[in-house]
Image (tube, rainbow, N blue to C red; front, side, top):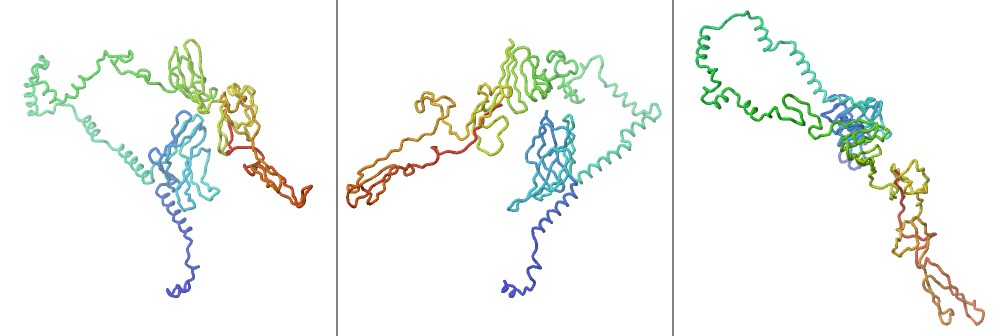
Length: 473
């Protein structure tokens, strides 16, 4: 490097010209954010982006583009919130990067009573804006600011122009006003009266009722009544009725008149055979949301409760009632859980926990002893059920460990005639250990299963650890 400095005649040290490019780029980002704030203000939204729409107790934040705190962010998909009351919905924008310096605006939607701009634990600034308020009845008030500052200025100018226009008389108003001030009298000229007289001589004869018109179609076309005639020909006769309602004047058609369901009816309990259509129940019936089909006779119902369980019910005209909960995994069934994440609601681990029949009535039908299975540390094996591979077993019985027989053999126990061992046996020769004879030795044998199979403190197949969980609700 010293040679390069000499060749280029550079005498300034590196410490004086090196630049912290990270700080410089951060400054550029901040300058761009402030420029966006100059153009869009504290926040700016477009179309229905980030608007909050209520449907029963579900609130959908619509996808779209917005600026908050000078950051440009996009909500790529609609986001759903549940059961909002006396709160606000906030859009949270933060400009963040990863280890490969890819930076983008991270967008979050959250509900809170009051949320201010903040800096998170990683040091990233967050800029927030309330897009909607939800009152105690669950009604939504839109708090978004529409468009850029220029858009708002133009809108204000248009409103001002409209206000100014209302302060001046229109041409029609001037003409009407002047006519009101004009003295009454006949101002027709003699020439105009002559034209009127000549026109009267050629007028249609009233007593002919149009019979003296040689070409009626051409006459209708000349006076601009073609469309009127066509509408009259296609008009519905006034003696026609819809669901018994005469068309002689305007009528009010209800949803049932055209075979459609009316709006959702809010109830305190599940409807009986007297009701047909959508319904929504309160807390007493698990916030059921569903539909009832049929009135008076056989009635079918389907609804979803607050735990996202699907219910079906059939009300027979003879008074019988059949009701089921439709689930992908039936109550009492065991599945494997392969994650350290929390076990889902409605499931419990198979660890022998006791339960109350009053709390879990359906589960008590599956496990009458009111205890869940304890499957910790055990392998599962299908019940033989007559196949003959594992006879004599009952459902739920625990079988102790066992191994298949291991064999070996010993032969020729004297050193003179040779010796051998096979399988799990081994031998060791020791000189001079014989009771009689010169120079003789003894041979000892040992048994070690690890010589032929893998060993441990238990017998087991190749396996993978899981958590067995059972659906309890």
